[in-house]
Image: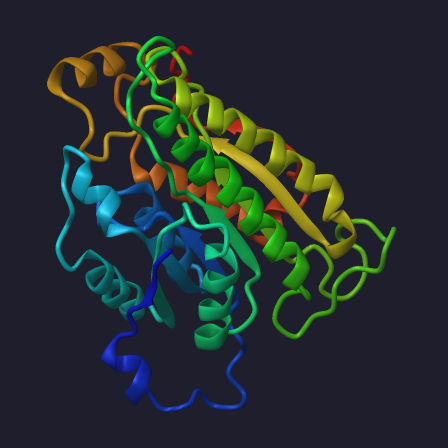
Length: 289
């Protein structure tokens, strides 16, 4: 299991913020390894909305996929977020290791402070069906998409103490009750793709159940938990034939963009999104399943 932190030079040289400056909440976003990816789009939107951003990436995964690794992406994304006013922590992490979530949270907290929102946008996704999926591939998909997500949510729940300057809700008080209650957010990205993509779809289905359970089991902390299905978003993995077919199958006549997903996640993480909880939301332009 490997974890590397990649701080920018500005982290070491930046002057302390004035004591009167309001604290920015911290979002931890997984799967931010490519500048055109959904994770990066979410990071940009939350940074613009006043969040500090810790994010994870895993270059070896991109390197073995057909799109390849994007050299310097983590540093480039961090610089972009900093220009929007965010402090950042870029953490390279192999999520197949069961101890990765603890180390990720340790790094994020050391650099930025307690995490208020956890956004799960990482994925292991290698196409294979019922007859040609290997045991090794099946286990790896569940280790990354399901087990790591569960452990990240668990670690978040164990550490969560409310938003900046706030206290968690009292047990039984309910979301939105009391000072600072309802500040916590969990948002996980999922998919309904299963045919010809068995281990990915099955492991994402299990992720859905875990996240929705968190909406109830972490309610006493003032945490909401939702699942978002972003539909067909082309982040470089589609060929021309697939792109055309998916475009024609969407009533709006276009594919989704990372910004489409980011706007919904931004809303769910905002005070205005507090009443949306325990939901599987399809933000897919009406695309047929």
